[in-house]
Image 1: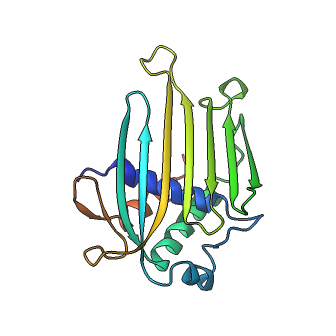
Image 2: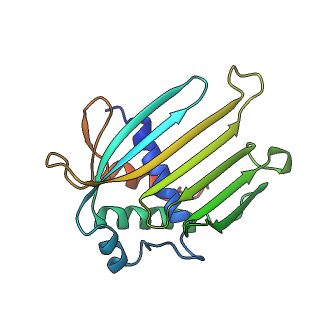
Amino acid sequence: MKIAKGLLGLAAALGGLAMMGADPPLPVSPSSDAAMARFLPTPRLFKMEVTRQAPLSSDTVLMCMGAETMRSTLGAFKDRRAAAAAPTTGCTSSRTRTSDGGMKTERVCDKAAGAARTSRTVTVMSPDLRETRVHTEIEMDPARKTPTVVQDRRMTLLGDCPADLKPGQARQANGEVVDVGGVLAAMATPPKPKP
């Protein structure tokens, strides 16, 4: 089964939500059942759009997500963050509130300062979590045909799930419906320590 880039982007967006957890607090905490139930009183449909430059490509995935699906996924990513809590050499992060009460985070890594690659990721979330945008730029090998990879991801809450999508299922651009719970959980699993 081929997993669409949009589905991988969804996992990245969910991971970004978990990474922004502590202070200032998110409108919805993955550890708060009551807050998550208010945000997702019934399973809701999210659209994940991924656009990549040079070569230009795009993908869209629709996912039905209930409170338990999102809470457990965010919790899994939070566990991964805790397992990899050591600061990353050559990278800095900032987090600010936007004028509408949402949140903006920026992570910049500099290869000259010891990071694996020079990169910049900006994440902007609406205050009600109905929309999340992630813009990423990564400098690759200068000899490559595309020396810089640019990717934009947008996750939007559309409304109620259609009757043919159950919580934890996603419809890829080709129409195929996949169960993404296991995929997202596997991506969120903390890396095994190296011997």
